[in-house]
Amino acid sequence: MTSTPVSTNSAFADNAAALPASWHQIGSRTAALGFDMPSEPDTGTMLRLLAASRPGGRLLELGTGTGLATVCLAAGMAADSTLVSIDIDERIQAVAREALAHDPRIRFVIADGLDFVRDQPAGSFDLIFADAWPGKYDGLDETLALLRPGGLYVVDDMLPQPNWPANHQARVDDLTARLKSHPDLATASLSWASGLIIAARRS
Ligand SMILES: C[S@@+](CC[C@H](N)C(=O)[O-])C[C@H]1O[C@@H](n2cnc3c(N)ncnc32)[C@H](O)[C@@H]1O
Image (cartoon, rainbow, N blue to C red; front, side, top):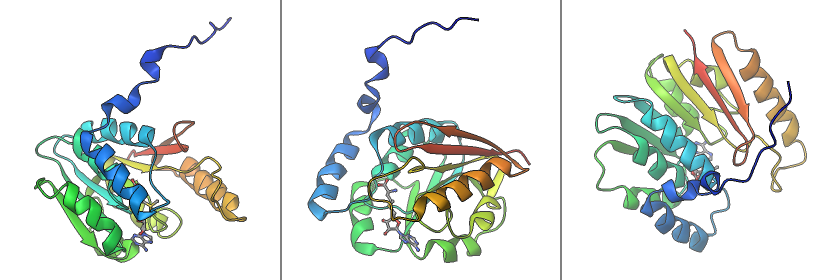
């Protein structure tokens, strides 16, 4: 079978138009704070889509940062979905709290992500965006156990990044292998934004 050459289509280049207005406001605050771990715009558009696929769902974000991903999750969530977003840094999370103060679906928590995960009942979340060391490189099995059947686990920064420490590629490779070989997960690696892996819990 011959393949058709991929043409450039501007409809594929305007994902950023789907970002909420608050994303742009937070972007300015993020730069002013010198916060150097922000998620990418296309990560936000994907999270918005995935959040919209979980009506009535309970969502968890590990690593709020300044809330760039949080506002995208919020933009996709149904009125009856809820989100808990965890960060250990009160000063950084304060930007997100301010931007989403009006939204009763969202609860912000200052805690160590792994402590929070260990306090939650198994099967209690429908989507987890693990964007901190805990839930990704620490406590992976405990975090995956929080997913309900059909629940989604999402990580970004899986393609090489300029700010990675020297030995980080081995950790990324190990995480990728664990997700792909997990018997209870259906997993896809996407060359999207900083490199996403999305996994769905089968049982
Ligand atoms: C990659 S950034 C998150 C970026 C954010 N999700 C966004 O959309 O821009 C990682 C965040 O994890 C937080 N963090 C680091 N260690 C943590 C821990 N042990 N528990 C919870 N949060 C932690 C950092 O303060 C930082 O805000």
